Image (cartoon, rainbow, N blue to C red; front, side, top):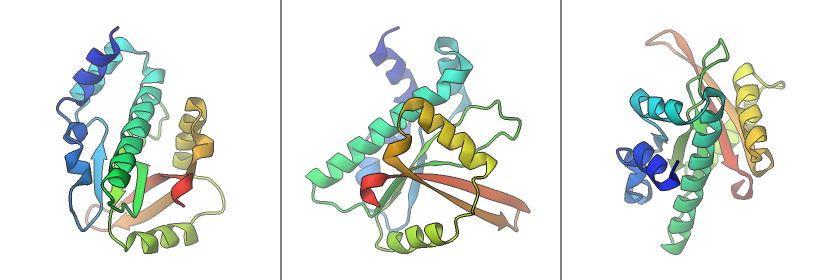
Length: 171
């Protein structure tokens, strides 16, 4: 298996393949899935065991996030809050966790960070536990701070959960 070929199949049609989209000027937060189509996930399933796909995707997300942060520093651009987020969870426990790149350039990011910290539950949820297990397996757990957001979306009457993994050195 050629590494370049594997990555090319996965990222060539993703928005972040052109890193300028992540370094662009936007006022509100942006969130980009590492894989936006299930068809690309199926390509990984042909190369990796199902249990290893989340590990691969997290490694890719950490690489892209670090690259975006380095480019921002090189261009003297401030990214107020960057994170790897997770929003899709299978309650049966067998699904692949697909990370997203979360970028919030606004100065309001500090208020968001403080709100998240203030509203953390006392015990880890099932979703938080699953994300932390993934980061532990990949050896990244000590490099990130994990925060959880939950709210009821009245439009669809569903509870929406987002787990943030924020690089520790940016806290």
